[in-house]
Image (tube, rainbow, N blue to C red; front, top):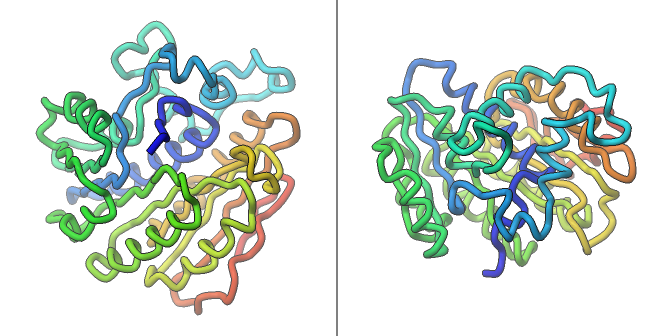
Length: 310
């Protein structure tokens, strides 16, 4: 595969993905029993923003940098204070080694989750690419909570589920180099995983280029076997071009109680601070709620910063 997250670390899609990840980990951490975190496509774990990859694209400048330095961007001088979730997320980014004097490194999902976990929690990290897996193993070689697997993440779920903790989170964040084929792999993996571990929480990140590419996947999620499906999306460009990343979303199956309340104000702030050539749009809605029949089709996303609620 040609995809390397180092080129995209800290971009607007990461802001959405990793703030939702923190909200999920905090929800799991609110109960005393230990939990497991399982990452199907973990990457290398940490990325240098002054490296050649991030330097080539500079995507973090329109992502995390806009939250850290809003006054540097036209139209955001009156951004106001951040919601507490986003403030905690940013504080966690700046607390990693190397960021003492400013934003130099961006931690990936494994490192962000590990830093938010407790001593009694555990993580299983899967990465297929040899170089990425080696860096990941080196990053966590002194952390007994973290286990790195150099293998296909979809296949690994069959062996790793259910975890011994019986509660936790699976993050599915593949590269989507062939979008339609990737969606089919995710659908199959989710159905098998929910049969093995029906009470687990599953968070799926997905890119948005053409809305027509995403809708069939979203339409099928309520029929995956989950009890609840929550969607959170952020669009910085119209979802009508296959030539660029226009937005991204997180679909959370078996979403924790009140997760939608925890995400509403952060999404509103992201839309305000991450707008580019047009006002950003955000969506927060339930594709399936417990006790409801799966809908025939996923609803269209809300526009102009107004969430659609069901």
